[in-house]
Length: 126
Image (cartoon, rainbow, N blue to C red; front, top):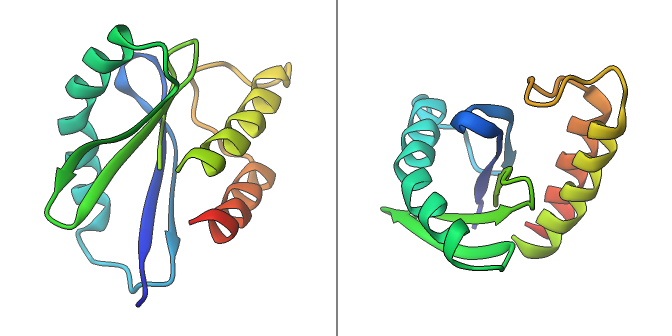
């Protein structure tokens, strides 16, 4: 069965700073809007949970039809949507991006190297 996942990193003020749709399923026409809708609907739940637990991986926090929202929250409250080992490795990549003196924290991540690594990790774990 073909599946697809939408991976989104959400910065402060609930602004998506990186998005990638990975998987082998055919892409729906309205996928981008649907993923944004589901993300913003789940953010309130995520924010409440993030302040009540010390866990970084919040597992499944919301559902919409057959879609599940899984979340990984960093100490700086940057949200990663998507699975635990995948999240941990992408978090390491994200830290490397933050260490780049040319990257402005909170701005969109446009690095093709970052995108390639995330997609390779998605193939490995998702």
